[in-house]
Image 1 (cartoon, one colour):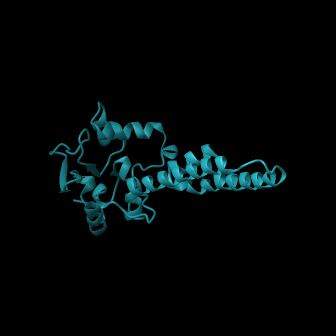
Image 2 (cartoon, rainbow, N blue to C red):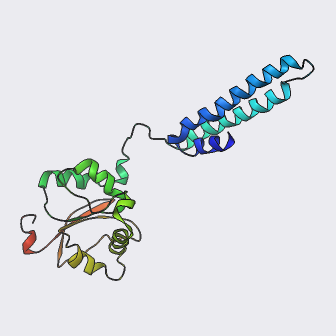
Image 3 (spheres, helix red, strand yellow):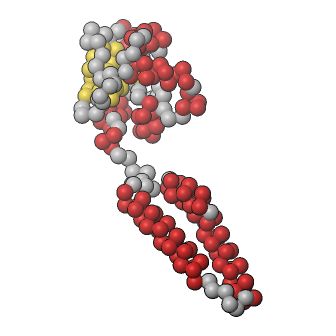
Length: 199
């Protein structure tokens, strides 16, 4: 029961697990009441007080978690964390070709841009595999070999980049054009003949 309570309080999606300790509690008290009838000298008050203190602690914990951690049960999008402006632009201009995007934005981009655009990577790490994730971080943090991945292996036509410490947010001016940037993101187009329709 304690294990299920701790797991239930660890994340909103596990709250249904509270039914297990509650059912155990109900069963416990039904057994206590039956044995109380058989042994009149026995008192239930100490056990009842312990269980009430335990449940009060659980309720306090639930309330503290509810006020301290936004559960986001309505699936509202925290727009300051995502490239909302870039998504609006991409819907209007209909870019074609291969897109690079950061791992953390993949799900949002699918939500906004599917089926017109295909993301490079998203949160489904099991499907993508370790090699693709390594390439993603190599590009994003400009580790050795990132330029070869961008130009030769994946041949991106446009790149969406986050403006964060430790992440690439600029590309070589001679081969890329900055289409848009704001406080959290930038969008670059490759300058070459194959990308003429986008340019």
